[in-house]
Length: 387
Image (cartoon, rainbow, N blue to C red):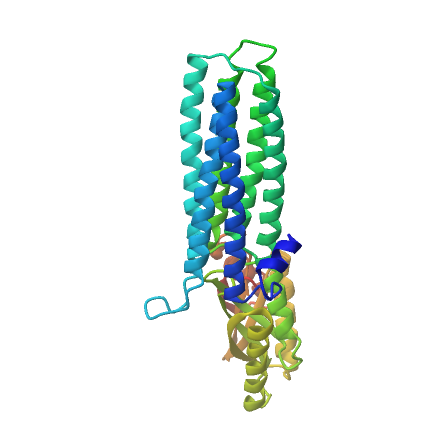
C-alpha cells in the first residue's frame, strides 16, 4: 500500500483535500477492477473445468465487484465536484450514494446465485475434482484478503464509508471462496449435492455483506451520530479558550467526507466585554475550520457568574437533575423573582436513548425543586443534543 500511495498519489497525507481524496478513490477502484477481472476470468475457467456452480457463482460475484469498483470510481469523481447554485454544500454525499448502489449490486448477485444453487440441489450434477481448481481458489482467497485489507486501510486513512464497505465486501468474498473451496474438495469424497448447498451458503454470505454495506452507507445519509472523536476535538478546541466557561447544543451536519458544518452555544460571563467575547468566538471558529476542517458557527450565551445566590441555586439544581440521571446537564440557568414566587428557568440536555418522556422528566425536576422550597417553580426546556 505504501508503495502504491507513493507512486500514484501526491501529498497522500493531506487527506482532507478533495483532490487527494479523489486520487485515493481512483487508486482503490483501479486496483479493485484489475484484481477482480483477473479473479473472474480464472474462476470462470475453473468453474467450467470442474462443472461447479459454486465456483462459477463465486466468479460472477467477483464480476459484480468490478461493477462496484466502477461505481466507487464514478462516485469519488462526482463527490469531488465543488458547490454550485443547486448544491450550496457540495456533492460529497454522492460518495455515500455510490456505496448504497454497491450494496444493491451485491444483493442482486446474491439472489441470482441463490436461485441457481437451489436448482443445483434439486437437480444435482457431478462436480469434477481438480487440484488446479483447488490451487486457483486458494490463490484467490489470498488475493481477496489482501484487497480487503488494502481497501480497509485506505478507507480508514480518508474516513470513507464507501471504501470501507468495499473492504467488507472483499472480506466476505474470502469467506465465500473458502466455502466454495470446501465444496470442490468434498466432491472427491461424496456424491451428495454439496456443490449446490455450498453455493447457497455463498449466496447467503453475499446477501449478508450487501445488507451490511447498505446499513453503513444509509447511516450518514439519514443523519447518524457524528464521530465521537470529532465531537471531543470540537469541545476541547473551544474550551481551550479560558473566556469560554462551557458549551452546549452542539450539532454536526455531515454533507460528505471533509464537508462538515456545525453549530454550538458557548457560555461566557455576562460581565465580560462583548467585543472581547466576540473576538474569542471568532478565533475559536477559525481554529476549528483550519485544524478540524469543520465550518462552525458559535452562538454566544452570557451567563451570570458573580451572583452568589444564583451560582448556589444553579449548582443545587444541577445536583437535583443529576439525581434523576447522572448524564443530564443544564445550561442557560436564570432566576426570575415575582413577588412571593421564584421561577427557575433553564434548559436541560438529555441523551437520545433516555427512556423517560420529557413530561416525566419535567415533573420529577419540579417535584425535587418544590421539596426545597414550595415557592420555587421550574420552567424547563429539554434538548436532545450532543452536549
